[in-house]
Image (cartoon, rainbow, N blue to C red; front, side):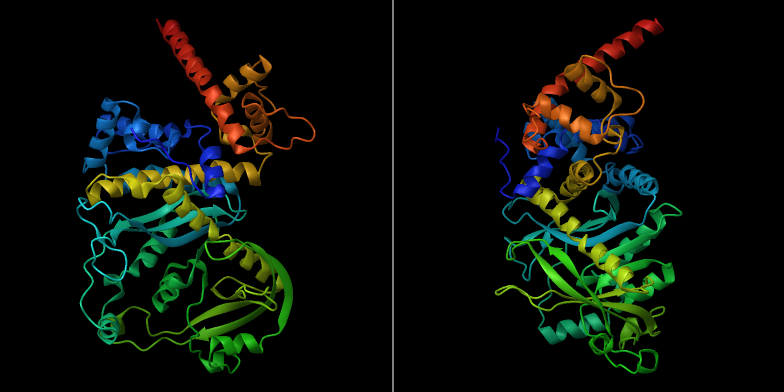
Length: 496
């Protein structure tokens, strides 16, 4: 069997190692799974646990033996295990986590492309590039992923996975004319509207929810759809839209309105690195303007669309870097929102929220570079959809544990670890059970795991790293299983 390869991205590798400390969460996350077959429900939980325990490994290696591997293959081949049914208990649990946060939830929408072109035997794929070439084929996934305002991922509220139809043979002008007369429901961009609607339907009552998205979401129907749903949004502008001058301080374009607006202040923002950009700190100048956007001209089915001809009032937030370092592209954002932005402090909050959007891109990295989902060879698109849905949930969990420990080290450890895991850890480290009150914190549990993994805990040693934590958990897991078996035997003895 092929050994799981490490990930070249150190941030993703840290998430992979830190997030697999426990797989007890699988039982809780999929407790309400209903695949119309109780045996299949149990197989889903078992397969999820096996894959979560070794997320970078191929299916056969993660499952450990041929019988479990065959059972996993049957799961991914079973029409009862639809992506929607696999996801449902997760989005229900996500809504509960959102309700428990007591704060605004940021729901990031984004699209990711999975390439399976090198697996020439795989059936049911579609183009993911600009051609119908065999090497440029795969599946497309669009998600609405909930985060706390501090950047801790909570889970997926909406997910769509599909294969694109073949690309028509047409020139650029023909493509524009075709799209102009195509109803929004028949376009791929309807993914944004579906995710927005499902976000509103599935989010818990009483929790403020803000959809955050990049420039691809900036089309007029998104704004009108959000208005109909009373959904709050914070999206980046793609074009310099025309305005209604009499409702926009006489301005005819968005950039004109922002240039006329006074500077409210400056702030420093951390710009994360990517493949072509180094991470750095940027000084940003902030302006705000309230404007009314004209509806664009419509033809064909667009002309009859509900609300498509009515102007929409939004607030613009302009964020411009005045002196970027040599060789670096200046930060220049124009954000559209229907949230109130009364002053510099409020504008700063919205910019910080938009900055958390990179979290969903890191999640994409976890799936691709960490879990290596593009290496899967299930040879059928429908099987891959089920596989990707399950790994999407595993990927969220990997990030959740890693980010929660960073953002909230003083949280009760019971929010991440089961009671049996905490008991086993305390027995190994202190030869006693954990105190009932107060419950141990995440920081305390992380330090004990580090001690099991070889961390000395001296004053100059700092906090244990993820590799040490992973060694600690590996050492602990056998004790957890033994304790669980012991409790089960006691329970059976008491009932007899």
